[in-house]
Length: 277
Ligand SMILES: Nc1ncnc2c1ncn2[C@@H]1O[C@H](COP(=O)(O)OP(=O)(O)O)[C@@H](O)[C@H]1O
Ligand SMILES: [Mg+2]
Image 1: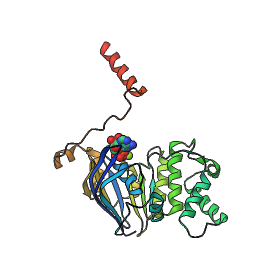
Image 2: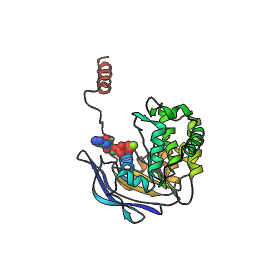
Image 3: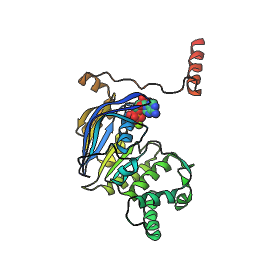
Image 4: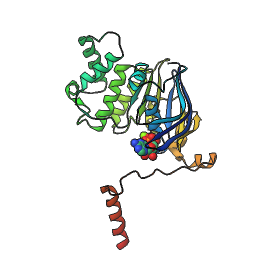
C-alpha cells in the first residue's frame, strides 16, 4: 500500500449518522495514533475502512492507492492488505482457531500453505504471543480471556502480514507483560511499506510503538491531525483544551444502555437510596 485516503466520509448505523465528514490520509510506513473520547466514532471509522456491512456510507470515498474500495467486500479488502484487530473480538463456537487461521492465510495466497509450513509459522507467532499451542485446537476466541483474545488478534496480524494494520484498543485487557509482547510484535513488523492505524486511550501503549502522527476524532470528525506530541498533551490535559481552542462543543457519550437494564436500575436504586438518607 502507498496511501489510503478517506475523504468526506459520512456514515450511518441504524439510521443514526456517526461519521460526519471524516478526512484523512495514511501513507506507507506511518504509525498513526487515533484518539478521541468514547463514542465519537473511532471504531466506526476502522470498521468502515475494513468494510463491515453494518455501517452505511452515505457520502464520501475511501481510496486505496487511488482505487475506491467502497464497493469491495470485506474479504476483498483483506486480500488487498487491510486488517482490523477488533475492539471486541467475537467468539465463534464451532470454528477451530487453527482452521480459521489457515483458511485466512490460504485466502490470501494462490497455492494453499503446506501443513508443515503453517504449523511452523503458527508455532513461531504463538510463542511470541505466549499463546499455548493447545489454544490452536480450541474454538475461535470461545472462553478466551480478554487478554487472550487481544493476543490472538495480534497472532492473526503476524500470520496475515497486512499492509495496513488497524488496531482498535488492542491494549485493553492486557497486563504489562502482554502489552510489552504486543508492542514488540508491532515494532518488529514495522517496515517502509506497512502502516499502522492504532486506537488507544493510553500514552503507555504509544510510548512503546512510537507513532509518527496523531489524529483526534471528536463528534464524528477528525478535528486534529498532526504531531504525535498531541498524545502527551491529551494524556496530561484531556480533551477540554480542544473544545476551547477549536471552539467546538464535545458531545457527551450517550447512554446506549437499555433503560430497563440491570445497570441503569442499579444506578437509579443507589441514587434513590442516597436521596432517602
Ligand atoms: N449498531 C449500532 N447501533 C446504534 N448505534 C451505534 C451502533 N454502533 C455504534 N453506534 C454508536 O456510534 C457512536 C460511535 O461509536 P464508536 O465508533 O464505537 O465510538 P468510539 O470507538 O469512538 O468509542 C456511539 O454513539 C455508538 O453508540
Ligand atoms: Mg471504539
